[in-house]
View (cartoon, helix red, strand yellow):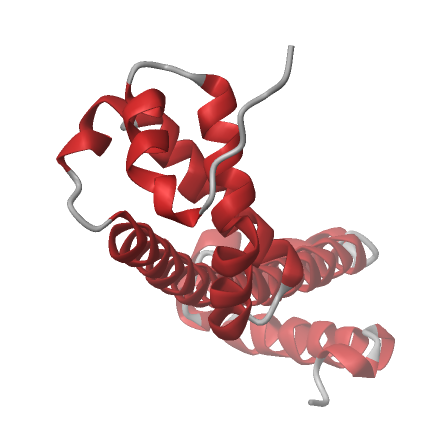
Length: 189
């Protein structure tokens, strides 16, 4: 059985056949317009992959709207307008996706910086607590009262039943020990 072929002048007949679901007519229309739509899309999208996607999506839209095709007066103008709209949407989407990727990238970089800062802070805090445990018991207690609980030397002296000058002496020795033993990279920046 021979397959009837159509030339450009028979576009109206093709459209009528397509509107009732004729797949052979759709293939003929595809063969008739594929190259021209591809070249049109390439001119704006500058990517063979994107241009081919444009052709596929345009023809998919034609097939989906096949019942309405008989209402189209100038199919060639209509199909190129459809292709133009598709390309504009593709370019807009690409622009938005680039902007979104840039925003996500900024957020990820910021989150990574915060995460790294938190890790350094935790490492520093752990190191400080470990070093405090190396202090004599009374010096540990005085240091914790004055630095962690924000007690004045006088308040710490009253709580521990010692003189203010003893509290001061223990704090000086504790600070000297920490400064001498704490890695300089954490406090010389």
